[in-house]
Length: 315
Ligand code: NAD
Ligand code: UDP
Image (tube, rainbow, N blue to C red; front, top):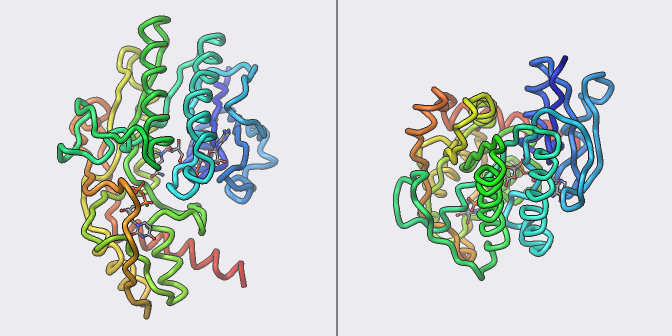
């Protein structure tokens, strides 16, 4: 029988690419979303596919359906969105994980939790390995996301130890690509939209902070390989591109690739903004045989084409 797979947060940026991939592989997909940051446009092309089902639901409420696998991606990922309703953000990660783990337990489904590099906080170890416990402020503006995701990881591991459930935890590092929301607020979408409109590029701080940017197709490949690993491999495993850039370098690259006339505008750095971030992906290489192969330049070119289309549609 065809496997039935639940993707929570399925109409968001990563979730919609995952739905595409699972349908291409011939699975039945239930895409669940409350449309907090997700958009119908991301999955419009899937409506009418007999293997695809869209379900409006909030993961903070229990869910009773029958599925074989669960990818739990529901949670706003951009700092401006997850800080808009921080209580709901914590609830989404924590109650959402409890509900999805409870569902997985009842129907004996395998569950993959989308965790984040934010569990390392403002890291004192560089690059970050999975064995590092992190440096997280528990009472700051980012805590609703960071601590919510950390607690979701705890819940996964307690369900694994207590109920011997098959869990898979991935820690996603900054990922970008087509279908990011144009006003998502994350750095890649902000800079590309600003560059295409010849508006000032808003650099927070002096732009010397670093991130390591992974293209969406690479990330989805890693996520899918993780779900297929042997039962005893739980992770957590880092998924990201180890090529590290400063935010200023990213701005300059986007200006060059778009041929923009934008200038750089420096704005105050938000509180607790991590100074450096780069994944150590040795574990993913070893266990998943995975590493990213799309360079920042080629990934950005694809993403720029996507945002040009968004601007054309806006008229
Ligand atoms: P996104 O905001 O585009 O997608 C999140 C989706 O979850 C949206 O469709 C949103 O409407 C939905 N959602 C939010 N709260 C919900 C709720 N209570 N019930 C049901 N649906 C809800 O973000 P994304 O980049 O696609 O991120 C997907 C997942 O990956 C998130 O869990 C995020 O924390 C994780 N992640 C992403 C990145 C990245 O760089 N993209 C990095 C680390 C972790
Ligand atoms: N950033 C920036 N200008 C923007 C948006 C973000 O300089 O318009 C910076 C932000 O301060 C951070 C980095 O870019 O240092 C990445 O931010 P993002 O919100 O994409 O993700 P984060 O990794 O901080 O969760």
